[in-house]
Image (cartoon, rainbow, N blue to C red):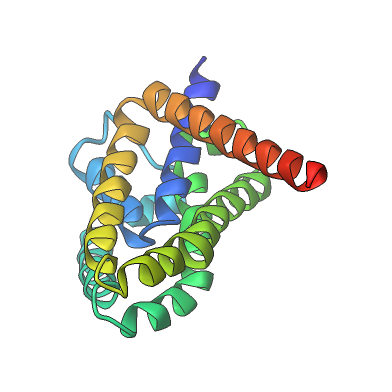
Amino acid sequence: MELLLGVFSAFGLSASAGLNAYIPLLVVGVIAHYFPKTLTLSQPYDLIANPWILILLGVLVIIEMIADKVPAVNHINDIIQTVVRPAAGAIAFAASAKVVTDINPVLALAAGLLMAGSVHAVKAAAVRPAVTAATAGAGNLPVSIAEDIVSFIASVLAIMIPIIMGTILIILLALVLWWLWRRTDKVQTA
């Protein structure tokens, strides 16, 4: 059961990194630093809880939040984050101590990279362009704020109540698969 909860936690953290690269890393670092009984990071991921790294992550969170809310800059930010978010997701996934001790670190990094990369791809290639087109760009600010809030809540839930995060991820995966199935079914009948 502990392995399953660790996997749910790791997938939740990496998924939230697909929305904002630094929020899950900051949440992991703060919880590991101030509540070590709740989250203990194994080496080398314990560096995330270092106060200097926490300050750096805090600055990076602020920079990404601001950049993502400025028109035109948000598109440049999404291009840059195409590399950063999957890498942050890989680190967030692998940093979950319970998972790293039971799963090969390379597999953990790959899983986190794929999860964060997938969430980022959907956000940057589908959701944001649709919001921009539908609202002439006016909807990007509230959507960006919502993404930051979801990333924070998902990160906290992934660590504190991983079973809820895992359930949410499974439901979302089922909905995406159902949508894809319906979409391909409509294309084949047309």
